Structures are given as structure tokens and as C-alpha cells.
Image (cartoon, rainbow, N blue to C red):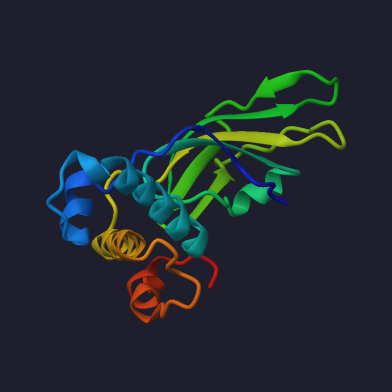
Length: 181
């Protein structure tokens, strides 16, 4: 079982202030930049929660109960594994050698599997395995970027938007980027 991940290095925002201004149809430069910056972050957070993925490159720490949980890594898209740590049967924290496992990542699906002729080490009962990884897109897929821009424009036009919003376009743009739906 995976537990909620913690972001240790924040996401790179993939929407620029210039793109947000253009989508919101505002030429006022610095007056609304702080507001638009906040909307960019909120739109990214919304898409991440809606799709169950990470947008923008970021480093996360996630914990699971057993090496078997690595068969389906929850944090995607998985770019690279920084480390996998576990507590051995003597109670010492160990870092798993990269010679033991390989990373398989295909956008919305990722796993960490044993290399040929390797086996997972024994862990102390009740301890958790800690995965530190870089996740997220370096550049947002076009449909994801457009969905974020639509959200930003909605926020800019109506500060209380979202309560009864029609999400048909938003849904359609993100349909191929939702995980586990």
C-alpha cells in the first residue's frame, strides 16, 4: 500500500505569465501578475488532483509497505528514481542498489521491478520503504496545457468560478491523461 507522497522540490510551472495573460485576454502587465501566478499554481494543482498525475518536474518522497507495492508506482509520470531506502531486519536503514531493480515507466504507468536473478531484501516488519523520485512532465502535453489555460481564464474572469461550472471541455481535454479512471 502506498501512502500520500510529500513534495520535497516544488514543481516547475509549465504555464508562463505571458500564456496566462493571453488566455485571460489582459494586456495589463504587472498589475495582475501575482494573481495570475496564483491561478497558474491552482490550475496545476487542480489538474494533478483531477488526473492523479504530476504536472511539472518535481521531486517527491513516497512510502509503501512492501517491495511488491513497487509493481505499480503511484507517482507518475516517473522520470527517475533518486533512491529506494528500507529498514533491514537488524533495524538499519539501507539504500537499495540500482543493480537490484529497474524502472519501467510509460507515462501514466510506472513500476520498479527486479532485474534478472535478483531478489528483494528482507525488511523489518512494520517498517516502510521510502521511494525518492523525480516525477512530472518537462513540458505539458498540449491538451493538459490547454485545460490549465482554460481554468486560469475561468479563475480570472470569475473569482468564485468552479461551483457549478460545466466541465465538459475540461473533461474532454484531460480524458487521455487521467490515471485509474
